[in-house]
Amino acid sequence: MSPDAPSRDDLSSLTAQAVRHHAEGRLAEAVTAYTDALRLDRRNPALLYGFGLVLRDLGQMDGAATCFEAAFALDLRFVDAADSLGTLRAGQGRFAEAEACHRAALAHGADRATFWNNLANALSRQGRAAAALAAWRRAVLLDPALPEGLSNLGGGLRDAERLDEAERAHRRALRLMPGEPQANNNFGHALQARLRHTEAASLFRRALALDPGYAAALCNLGLTVQRLGDDGLAERLYGRALRVVPDLPLARFNQGLLHLERGELAEGWAGYGWRFASGQAGGARQPRLPAWRGEDLTGKRLLIWGEQGVGDTILFSSLCGEAIARARSVVIETDRRLVPLFARSFPAALVRAARSDAEAVPDCDLHTPIGSLARVFRRDLSDFAGHAGGWLVPDPLRVAFWQERVAALGPGLWGSAGAAR
Image (cartoon, rainbow, N blue to C red; front, side):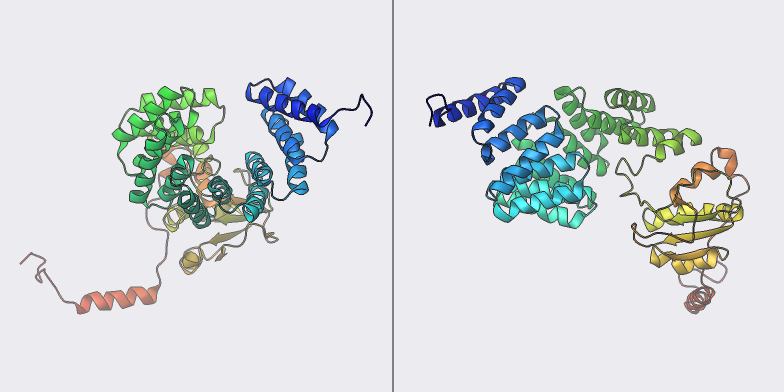
C-alpha cells in the first residue's frame, strides 16, 4: 500500500462521520461521508444500507432503492435492507413488491416483529384482510409491547367488525404510547365504530392537541361531530383537513356524506365518488374499459359492476333500469347470489357473476360501478319523483311456496277477524 492510500482507519472514521451526520440531520454532510467511504469499500452492505437511508430521507427514492437492493444482494443476512426496501415500495403504492421484500426479509429474520408488522401493512393495502390479521398477530406474539403492531392489529380487527378485540388491542397500544397521535386517533376510530362518539371525539381531540396538522384525525373528528349533530363544525374540520392535504380522499368522502344528508345530491355524489380512494368501499375494480361519466349511451354497450355488499348492490340496482333504457346493451356483473334475482328483474340485460379485475370485457364499451349510477340519474331530490315502487322480481315458485306455508299455519295469535286474542 502506498503511503497516500486510504487506510482501514480512514474507512472507520468516514463511516462514523456519516452515521453521526445522519443522526444530527446534516444530510448533505452524511452524503459526502458515505460517498467517500464507499470509494474505499464499494461492496460493504452496511455502508450501502446507511447511504440508502440518507437518500430516502432526502426524498431520493430511486437511489435509496438501489442501495437497499445492492446491500441485500451482497449479504442475504442483511435483512434490514430488504425490509426497508419493502417499506419504500409500499410508500410508492407498489404493495405487491413491498410484500415480496418483506417476505424476503422474513426468510432470514422470521423472529423480527417489525418485519411481520410491515408485511401485514402491505397485505392489508392489497385487500387481503385475513392474511394481514394473521401477520399482525404474529408481530404482537413476538413482541407484545410493539405499539404500532398493537395499533395496526386493532385497526384490522375493527375492519373485521371484531370490536371487543379491537378495543383491547388499542387500549394496550395507547398504554404503551399515550403521547403518540396515531395511537389516539386509531383508538378513537375503533370507538367510532361502536357509536361511542363522545369518547371517540375526546381521543381525536387528544391526537390533534399532539399534532394539529393530523389530517386523518381532523376527518375522523369531523365525522364524529357530524354524528353528534354539529354539521357546521364538521364542515369546518373537513376544510381544515383539506388545507393540510389537498384532495385528501377521506375528507372528500366525508364531505360527500354531509352533502347527501343535507339533500345536496350533486355535491354529495361527487364526494361519494371518493369512496374507493378513501378505503370506504374496498378496492375499486379497474376493467379494461373507459369509465362512463354520464355521456350519451346511444349505441354503447355498458358494463355495470357490483362494488360493495349485497345490501348496497340491491339498493343501487333500482337505477339499472334507467341505464338499460339508454344503452344499446347492458351487462350486469354482481355477486353470484344475486344473479338469478337480477336476471329475472332486468331481462333486457345480460346478468352474470362478477369476474376477475384483470379480465378484459370484450362485450362492453364502457363501465361504471353500480354506486355511481346515482350521480347521473339522481342529481336532485326531484329526480326521485315517479320512481316509487319495487324493481326486483321474486321467484314465483318461492312466492307460491311461502304463501301456502303461511296459510297452513292458521290464524296463530290473531283471530279470524284480525283482533288480538
